[in-house]
Image (cartoon, rainbow, N blue to C red; front, top):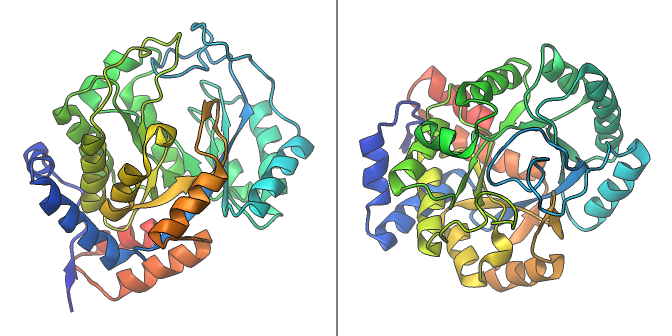
Length: 347
């Protein structure tokens, strides 16, 4: 019987050493971790819809939905339940198993939560898993979403604590952690990752992953986003990240959080098929599927389907993937109670 240690106390030096491994050695190690806990040929497919677009008062330097930036994004009110259902049904028919909904708020008001609750219940009735990203949550909001049937709440920490102030000034890093705490306490599954390619150093990319891996419980889903530089935002001219450095980031995330599902998220439209294939080998087990990620472009479904066929990958329903993780995790010997709970949560 092999032994798996789920850790929440990674040091910066340990993570820096992983990043510094020879590329092939790092990928081999990450792939071994991936196939131990997951079906290496299965990819969970999600669709992301902006249910309330633009007009956000925050100043996130990467975001075209910030009201203070001139990016051409028009502000729209929260969509109706019926309008969201049309898109959710289309996503289900296209093969998505999880429907993610994003709203450009600093945080929802009580009246907003009441309307989102209606949307969540309607989407859930279609048999889809549901995920929402609504910003900072107020008192009781997470529990109301949980009671409505929401499965996941997305709240990214975005970047390393020591780089956060270079990207966002209208909220601080602790605000992010406070909302994640509310989400965990409500019993919702957490979806939490970050963005790379914003001008951060490798040490700061390591700091992002360290902050994620050292959370009290590893996120169930860990989206790793490659910056989509949008004209009009402060990061429009950010220096492009080497694609192999992005693959390294996926691989290190896979090693640090063995049971989490690492999602290859924003920026795929700029990646060639070979880079995406390396990301899947390095441990990415989920993608967003569809033409848009909120307001930015995403690869066409036909391209993804063709890539899956070429790589012998197949989309799976989230429940099937979770069962796979549970079976593989249960076959391992957990070293402590916290580790065992973490693997169960990551399933």
